[in-house]
Length: 305
Image 1 (cartoon, rainbow, N blue to C red):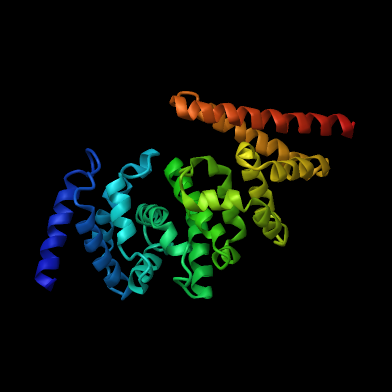
Image 2 (image 1 turned 90 degrees about the vertical axis):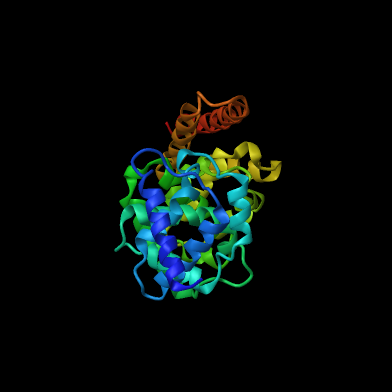
């Protein structure tokens, strides 16, 4: 597209989305065309030009439902799946946007898009970044997680979706910073049909072994908490291993961690008491998970006296 045409497109996008910014978020409209617009300006951003306002407006329609706790329309997901979000120029553009020097809102809109393109970045035979770039990028995500508590569930949902994608990749998981593991406390916010989420639970034992080998202990602490929250989804062998670990944990920090997992399960049950029938079925399973953990905690307290 000629430069004059891109200038006209920018004016149209800015005008359309500015009118809605204080009333209601814009609908996705034509996601294929907006993706093309977004990709072009991410290319320019990665090359050193400043197009943050155009990128921010173009990101908005993809995040309307994600920010309200719902996955985007199938059309949006389909269009994103067909778009090359792993091209070097696109990746470079996202890397430039996610830097802490940019505004909080812009960075989290970019992270929201990353939650949608997770499979293209993390389930790829060829890494989209060099190792040192992965480390820097993960550190920037961790900074966002600690900086942006005011964004609530949207931040948590994006962060934990991205983290599950990283866990699926043997290359990316090596670069997860210590302070980023705690977003797994919000693993209940992940879309249940997310392929990386399903893969992680199916490979729960392998990830348990991997996190055991980490020096900081945070990976093991939070991955083990995920297994308790989703105890009902584990096969019998893994379930017995998870319960066995709890029964052998120390009465100090180990017991405190078990009580933390119990509290997280209770919070998740409370959070969804007004949800629909399908979700209420899930909460019944959570209640059973809480009950099994509570029995172990009570037994450890009695044994410790």
